[in-house]
Image 1 (tube, rainbow, N blue to C red):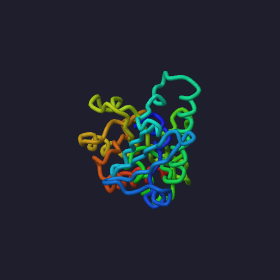
Image 2 (image 1 turned 120 degrees about the vertical axis):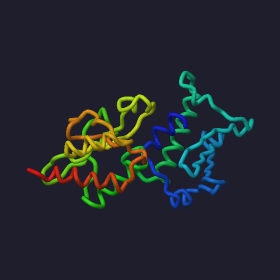
Image 3 (image 1 turned 135 degrees about the vertical axis):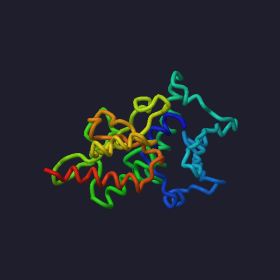
Image 4 (image 1 turned 135 degrees about the horizontal axis):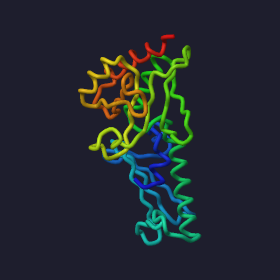
Amino acid sequence: MDGFVKRIFRNKKFDEKKMADFGFKSDGDGFLYTQNIKDDQFELYFRVNSAKDIETSLVDRMSGEPYTLYLVEDAEGTFVGEVREAYESALNEIAANCCNDTYFTCQQSNRITELIYDKYRDTPEFLWEKFPGHGVFRNPLSRKWYGVILRVFGEKLDKKLKSEVEVLNIKLSVEDVQNLLKQRGFYPAYHMNKKSWISILLDDIISDKEIMALIDKSHKFSAKG
């Protein structure tokens, strides 16, 4: 995915009904949408596969050849700028008409967010402008935090994790923290008290059911005092 796609669709979830209404057609294991842009000079191909990966290309309608200069950061000029603007506008239109907003990037992060809302009716608070991917779950009665979803560089947790990851920080007993750290998918709490908080990697290593059971424990701490 190019930079435009990553930025515009980062917190978006495709809705197949909306896609069909917008004009997407079934295409093997995914869905394809085409649109003429830049005064019909180019045809945009926008494909979403079954894994929700996005593939795009622009084809010059006169020559039938792919056009890629708009993706070259150093490429300058009025025409290239106009193509970039038309491409970005088309992507924004697709996102607005075919997607639902999500809070986070990882699928498990969003599932957990939905489960928390179903049980406690709490939604994440995004408190830091510099860290838009950090969402806090707070007990509305005590105002205490019982969960924080963070997007961090994986190497901060484990040198084997080379890309960005999302983790859930929750508060547990010292004994629970010590026991869980022996298991795969659990790490010393990122940027929080490591004695009573723990980070859970949200990449489906730990099941939603098990995570919610631990969130219930953390929520009980938030109700005290």
